[in-house]
Image (cartoon, rainbow, N blue to C red):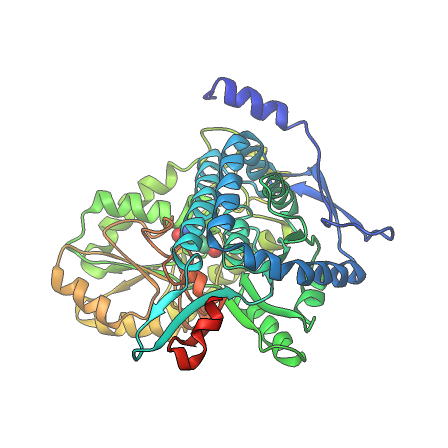
Length: 507
Ligand code: UN1
C-alpha cells in the first residue's frame, strides 16, 4: 500500500483513540449511551454518543435565548474574528478530523481532505459575510432631514440539523452561518456522526465562541423533534431527506411562537446528458467521479446518465473501463476509491433497489466485492439501464448509476422528464455545441448546472450550492444571499431636523 509518512503514522495512532459526544451542558440525569461503529467494519467501536434528554433540550434553548442578544450585539466584525480563529484551529487539528472522517463516516482520505477544506472555507466565507453585511447599518435613500438605515440581526435561537454525508462541512457550514448572522445555535448532528461534530464544537469553544451560543445536542430523531417543537426556536437549518424536511416544516407550523424560518437542503434525482459531440475521455472521468466518489453519497451525485443513442454503446464500453478500475474497500487504504455506505440500513435499502431493478431492467455491470469488505456496509458499485428517469421513485443514495438512452430529437422530452421528477438539484451536460447548452440551460429547473465537467464538489463562494422544489428552499450554501435568510432586517428612521429633536439625540 501507499504510505504518507508522518501523516499516516499519526492517523494510525489516532485510530486507537476512542471518542465521545455528549450534550454541551450535560445534566445529572444523563440520557442513553449508544455506541458509534465504523461503516467499514461494524465490529469496530469508534466512540459513544450520549443522547440529549428532553429536559436538556429545554435547558439548552433557555441558555441560548439568554445569551443571544449579547451575541447579536457583538456585531459582525467580532463574530467574524471568532469564526476565523475556529477555522485556524480546524486546520491545526487536521489529523483528528481526517481520522474521524475515515472511521466514523467511512470516507476515503481524498474525501476527508476535501471535507475539511470545505468546512474551513465555510467558516472563513461566512466570517467575511458577517463582516460585510452585519457590521455597519446600510444607508437607505430618503428625503432631506431624514436618516434611514437598514441593519441585519440574528432572529434568535436557530436549530441546525445536519446529515451524516458531510458530517463536518455541512454541520459547521449551517452552524457557522447561523452564528455569523447573530443567532445562537442548538445543533443536532446526524445520529451516525456525532463524534466529528463534537470535536468541531469543542474547537469553536476553544476559539472563544461562548458554549451557550453553540450547544451540541447529540441524539436520534426524537432529539430533533424535541428541538423543532419548542416554540422558542426562531428558525431551523436542515440538510437531509425531503421527507424529513416536510416533517420539520409541519412541526414548526404546529407550534405557538414565532413563525419560524426553514432553510432546507434536501434530495435530488440528478441527471447528466451526454451528446455525440462530447469528448469521451472527459465523460468517463466525470461520470465515474460524479457517480462513485464518496460511494455516491452526495446529494449532488449523478444518478441518471442520459446517453445519445448513436454513441451509447461505445460510451458505455469506455465508462466500463473507468468503472472496472475502481477499487472498493477500506477507506484507510490510500488506493481505495469507493468506501462503504454509512450503515446497514442504507446498505439494505440499496441492495433492495438493485434487486428490484434487476427483475425489471438490465443490470449492465456490477463490481465484485472481495472478502475484506465482509464486515462492513459495502455496496458493490452498479450500473443499471432504465427506460426513463421517471421509473425511479426515490433517490438512491449510494454507488448505483442508472443509464437511459435518448435520441437527439427528443432532448426536449429528456429535460421535461428530468423536471418532472420534481427535484431540482444538479444537472450535468457534456456537449460542445453552444446551442445545446443554451437550450438545456433555458429549460432545466435545477440549482447547479455543470457543463463539460463533473457535477459534485461545489466550492464555497465560487459555486454556491442548493436546489429548488423537492430539492430545497434555498438560499444557496456558500453564496452571497445565504446569511440573509438567517437574519431579520430592521429599519431605523430618524428625523434629523431640529424640529425632530435630533439635537437632543446627539446630546
Ligand atoms: C450534499 O451532499 O448534501 O457539491 C451536498 C457537492 C458538495 C455538496 C453536496 N459541496 O458535492
